[in-house]
Image (cartoon, rainbow, N blue to C red; front, side):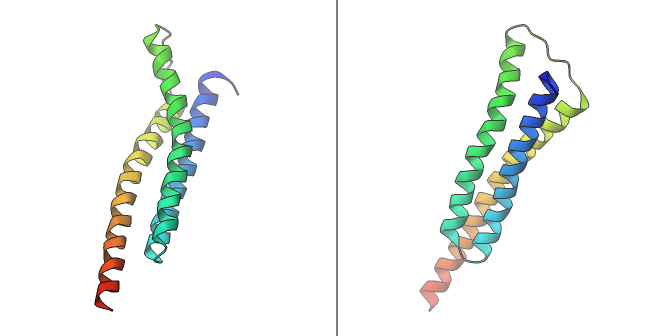
Length: 109
C-alpha cells in the first residue's frame, strides 16, 4: 500500500479512533463522569488532528500543482473526516447538557 491509498487509510484510521473517543465521551457524561468525558474529547481531538494533517497534506500538494487522483477510498476518507468533525461538535453539546443536568441535580439536593 502506498501513496494516496495509504494516506486515505491514515485519515480513516485516525478519525475513526477519534469518533470512538467522542462516542465514549458521551457515554461517560451520561454516567455522570463529566471530567472523563472532557478528557476523551481532548484525546479524540489529538487523534483527529493526525487525520486532518494527512488530509491537509493532500490539499497542499494540490495547491502546488500536483493533482490528486480522486477515488472512492479518498471520498470515504473525506466523508469520515467531515462527519467526525461534526460529531465532535454534537458530542460537546451533549456533554454540556449532561453537565447542566448534573449541576441542577446538585442544587436541588
